[in-house]
Length: 465
Image 1: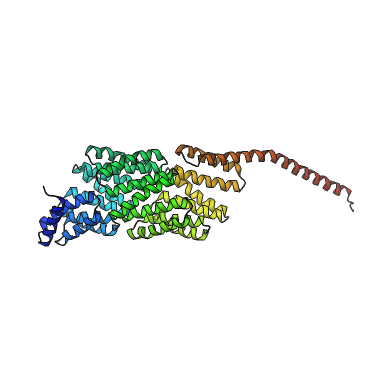
Image 2: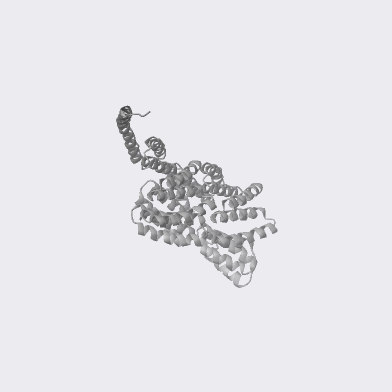
């Protein structure tokens, strides 16, 4: 039986001996095995060796796959487009659909969601036409991912829930794990942390079983994110550090930047601001280098947040104002609302309540639109504090009542403190109601006295004819 090492040696000999047919066939076999086990740098070298013998659609496709994962999306786009051209020339409809799907994936990585959807929607009917059930599920999953990134969680779940049973039906264990992971991510974004963990904990052993190292790191990172959301920061760091080690091992630059950003976020919340900045400043250039516009905006936003906590409001605004247009440009509605909310916070700290309220009121409808109940609670709380500071307790209480209900729905750790704030404001309103009648009576007495004195003065004054 031929071993993988023997196949690799056969490929080397075929390239050296200028035997293109053998090199292409063997190279494709080896590459597909390596792609399943996250040996992306090896796939890149293998495909480039094959391509020294002339154009080959499969080698270009495998090269594009590897380039996407190791953080070279623009190179990947060129490789996939060349592969697509060759597949169309050969009237290979199945691989044409695969290439269309992969081009959509790269556009998604580059932050162009609408272009990604266009390619996926070209791929989907072809996959159904040729009966490629596994490919159909992949494209359904990818469409779900775009809707998730656009903030339409329910639409995302709809596509994921179409993909999952197909993946199970065809025995696509790696794909099943991907969709389970993605469903978990949606529930996490919706604030249902326990449901998210349930899906992640189904995905993780499958990813280990199939040897999907990059996918394993993604799920570890996501579990860390969920524990972070639950307030267990040490557990979050444990999972993030496991993910980071794997991402560096397999050359997943985009994933490495994502995890560095998340570790920075935890250190910031633990009070170690300088450590947080160190991790963010490692993440930012990688995100810029790989063309991850969404991630770049996230890290810019997070750096702004650290400067805000350090008391450098102007520096905070500088970073937030770099993040906001990127988030608007790529259609990251959730991120846009976060940055709008954060700009509002800075203006409040600068004493400009009306400007703060303007930004909060831009953030709130977006958070409601995308179903971000945790974010909605945060922005409503901030609006409530503006109303409180301006002495409008009725409006502040109305907002806080909604905050507490949202906290209850998502099991938010601030439920108790927000409830206490609500009760405090209710007590303040009651106390004010007791004082106000006395204030009114005193004022009325003063006015009556003044009128009486005025009348007396008028009555005692002489008149002339």
